Image 1 (spheres, one colour):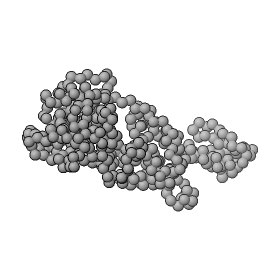
Image 2 (cartoon, helix red, strand yellow):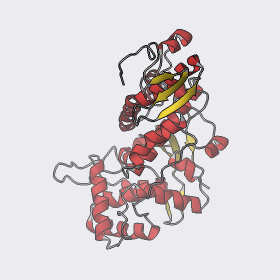
Image 3 (tube, one colour):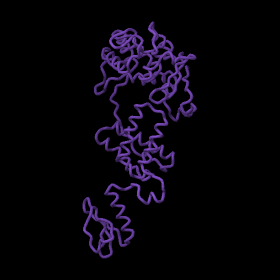
Length: 363
């Protein structure tokens, strides 16, 4: 953007010209000129701002910012603070790994920018880079992440408003087929006919408790006391206690009945375990999570179900969604069962910051 100095341009910022007392700024990208009038000071100010825009330095923390505020109000500095916010939430290791990666992406884009100078347009353009490449799920994930980044910054007084809120949420087409109750019955029958007992037991336990695969794999006798199943979810650390008397009417099973079926003649610390020694799996040993996933997929294929064209077959995780729908249909508190937090839940349950348990009502 440099240019040879002349008497007329001496003392003027790059791209600003004076002709007979009239100032004009020339865009170095296309040589188009913009008139700025005869006020020298105003013209210089606008030219400097325009140069920052085309050079990509607009919004970066300047020397004046440091002199006035003293504190570092850059996005890079806030990213350091936000990481502490995430760590304080006690998230699972995999979740933290994902969030650290997204935070690095945000830092790479805006590290030197003042966080309070980042606009809705900046955010929209940032999100659109994934949307334009057809990566709509990633675009939606980054928008959700940024929404929380700025929400936390707003709570700490770093910004007055959240520039992410007005942006459009990318529309994500869900390609995974939903699991219906009839599908469950067919896959469950295939599991009973062609697989070890733990496959059907894992499906039953997931359906009546609505918990994730990771939590199903960890459950054991130690989690049952006082007539309830106590689950501390691995992903979100939500704490849910489920009455053993809770019955899923659609299948006619209670949580307690399913747990009783899981406890066979083999001593084990886990409900989902190997009943016999086979290969590397010892009798009583915990079944690996990938084995649960693969066994469900095998039973699904053996069930003979055909899925809608363009849709991927449901995975073991879809049992959680099916459980939520079935419990909601019978009037049970599916939101509490799944351990989700929402404004509606806040009105019903006291937020104990992870120190107390949310009890699911049996009916």
